[in-house]
Image (cartoon, rainbow, N blue to C red; front, side, top):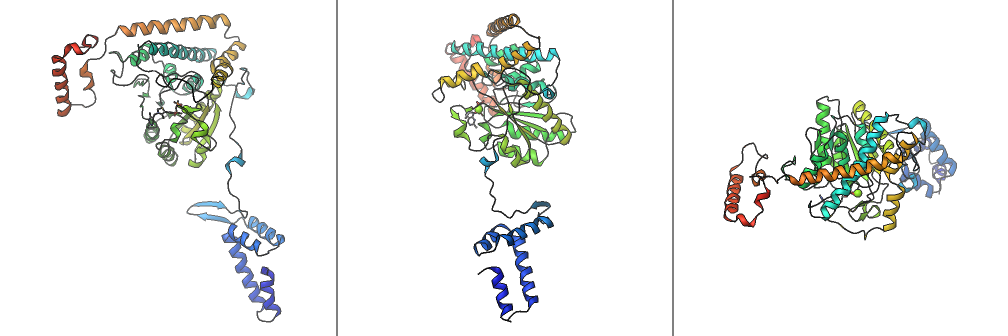
Length: 460
Ligand SMILES: Cc1ncc(C[n+]2csc(CCOP(=O)(O)OP(=O)(O)O)c2C)c(N)n1
Ligand SMILES: [Mg+2]
């Protein structure tokens, strides 16, 4: 029996006055309005006419009734409308240059000076040369460990170029190009990888764990994700101090699955912190592919859930990276809020020198990215079209760059390793008793067994 019949039968039988019908009608209508979806379905199955429902929906939208909830106003909807992520479509990828290195939209041209374009290109080539030389050095036993940035040069150089030198950087480990852009000497980089006595970390870190106080680059931690909440905290401190600078935090898409990512995103958004979360989505977390890592639309889609302005960009297009970070920086500082950038790129090299082989991906896939999607090649085409570059200069740069890196590597090998004492200093203002004891034990041990250790290679 429909609602109409239920109400009208008692009236026709004289058991209920017409005022009672109106009262019941109002109650029914009110209930439908306030409880929306489940009741609509329920009444539908009880046989309410389509016209009746249309009237209710129309009335609801006319009155624009809101679900007021503790300071927020939400719209009602009268359809059982689940959010189905795949129906929303994938977030598009912002680009400036197409694969052929041509500007797609004139109004997206950042119009940087020729000097900046040339520095961008040269730093990308330099990064590539350092990777090539140090990978070989690891094979030859000169360094204990290394990891390359091959294929991801544009994410690093494009983002670094868009920042102010006083902006604070938290990196993961695959962002050495950011340091190079800031002026970190190749010597510093080599000394760190060789852990010698010129290493700014005094040999107390694994290779590639660079850091530079002078260049506002916080020393890398191996533990994935630690940089994320630290970056949110630093950005909060910057905001409280009214600094005109933001923080940028780099991380891989695999690291976005670490527990630390959640508090970082949430604190940054809730406390309105000026931090750019820059995710390098390079397709893999060691051997784990994207399909095995997440089932949603990548990392950019997560931003909205936290209330963060977000964008997905072509990480192999250095100008797209530049424009996105430049704009993100402005949003951070003018609106005091975090921005999430997901840069789509591809890790061409092995995860590290410890993880050899490509059993988790095909050689064809790697080759395709290397040959057809190279960020360096794309930008070279662009600057060549602009008549800033040519093949001859390119050959000279590549040769000179590898030679220079090799020279610096050789010179770095001349330096001694830090003294054993360096393990015990610098952490505490005054060396605590237990460390002092350990140091004395070590000294005695080395004096007793001097031939067992290559002490001549260390500072005294
Ligand atoms: C807390 C923690 N868990 C696991 C590891 C081991 N680990 C080192 S790198 C890595 C993959 C990270 O992938 P991603 O964040 O995508 O960065 P990518 O290497 O691709 O640049 C893992 C699991 C670690 N270092 N720290
Ligand atoms: Mg990754």
